[in-house]
Structure formats: C-alpha cells, structure tokens
Image (cartoon, rainbow, N blue to C red; front, side):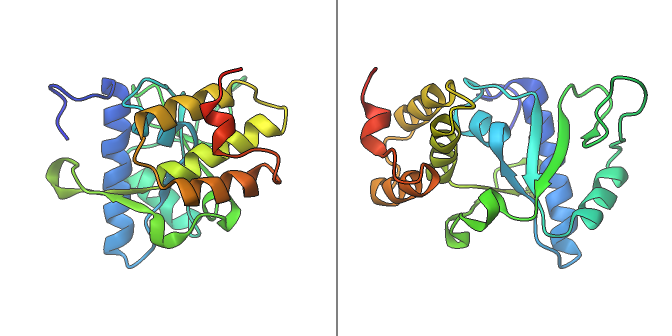
Length: 189
C-alpha cells in the first residue's frame, strides 16, 4: 500500500501503517495481533468513502498492546475536556482505542479474520471480515441507537457484492436477534 494513488485518505493510511507496526511488534513477541473493528474497518473496506474519527481495535492482551503503542510514540490525552480512554499519535488526528478483548464479543469466526499484508515494509494487520462488519452495522441499526448504520451496511454490501451471503445472513440474524436479514439491506425504504 503506497500513498500515491491510495484509495484511503492520508491520515487514515498513516493510522493503518501505525497499526501494522504495532501488529508486527505484537506478533514478534509471540502475542496475538490486534484486530481492527468498528469505523476503522468500515473506512478500510469502503476505501475512505465512510470515514472514522478513531481506530478501534480488540486485543486480549491490552497492556502489552499499549506498551507497543507507547513505543511507537502514542500518548494518552490529558487535560480538561479530553477523553482518557484512548491513545493518540501526535499530528495524526485519529485516536486509537482498545474496545474489547475479542471482536464483537467473540461472535466473529476466527478463521474468517483477514490478514492485510500489503503494508509498507512488510508490516501487516488483522481486520474483521466485511460480513461481520455489515452484521455489526445492522445490529446497531436494529437497536434503534444508530439509524444511520443501515445506510453504512448498504454501502458496504454494494462495495463487496462477493461477500459470503450465507454467512452474512446468519450473522445479521444473530446481531439483530432475528429481526433483520440480507434482504433488509438490499431493500430501499
């Protein structure tokens, strides 16, 4: 992945590179790589058509991941009006936050996780599959707390028509407690 001609906005590309370096450091220590989830995964799969304000990852070894983030130059924000939950890289504009120990509370099939290897200098990172990301968006939509997530699910599916529809249907049904399925994404309101 190189910046000229990259489909991603420059600050997101830099965040992916930092994530890949942290991932490689964790892997070199014999620890699991962090997994990109949430809005960062949506931005990756949409080539920055959907943009995020932070990079959410999961890791069962949060203290060790935070050590690696510090080594890369990340700092915890401090002061009045600042969130103390995440990490920021100076001048990046995107924060990093560990949001759990496993993606979607363990609902993601580990065999479906994607290793993205086309980063510079041979660094790679892990991301949830697009099907699980779409299902997560539908779960948020079904909860009533995020009606805009239906449109995100539709955009992601349109960008990834080769998604495994059987797996996607099952995951959407799980995330929405049976209330929605793939047809709800395809149907226009």
